[in-house]
Length: 179
Ligand SMILES: Cc1cc2nc3c(=O)[nH]c(=O)nc-3n(C[C@H](O)[C@H](O)[C@H](O)COP(=O)(O)O)c2cc1C
Image (cartoon, rainbow, N blue to C red; front, side, top):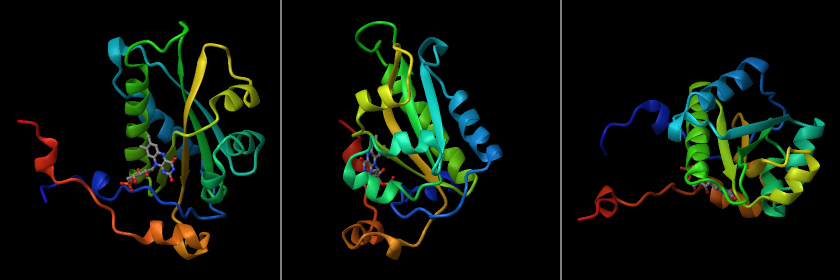
């Protein structure tokens, strides 16, 4: 395998989060700073975030808008971050979601640097999040990012343990290169 910076090599998305660790204010600020410095088309910075810490009102409102399957592991995460984008038109402007994804990617790398882990969820109830978090009309919820320290995989519901402990796989590089 070609060389990879340890920040990327050690990143992975766990299901098992530590049930009692807390996300410190300094680490939360550091994660958001990483997102803030992501590149975006024309430097428009369309990303917006709402951060909930375990058991606070924001965290609970984010959690209930995840699918049941995701709630079964996400309820242990120290923090749940709503990743949203601003949009003044009815349809998202070209590439806004691409920009948001870059901001979250930056955040995941920063999380690794802080010894934290992240797992993202796209299948969220976006209308529910907008209503429950009282978001302004031009802010569109898009994804939820669970953040925390690693927990014990065996603490997961039995059907998730196999997924958590299975081998991570990627397509070979040759498959990604066209022509
Ligand atoms: C956009 C996005 C959406 C995802 N949605 C979910 C999800 O709904 N449920 C889940 O358990 N994992 C979700 N994941 C985590 C992926 O399954 C995970 O990143 C992928 O299997 C690769 O594993 P790795 O991150 O450990 O390398 C999502 C990841 C991304 C980037």
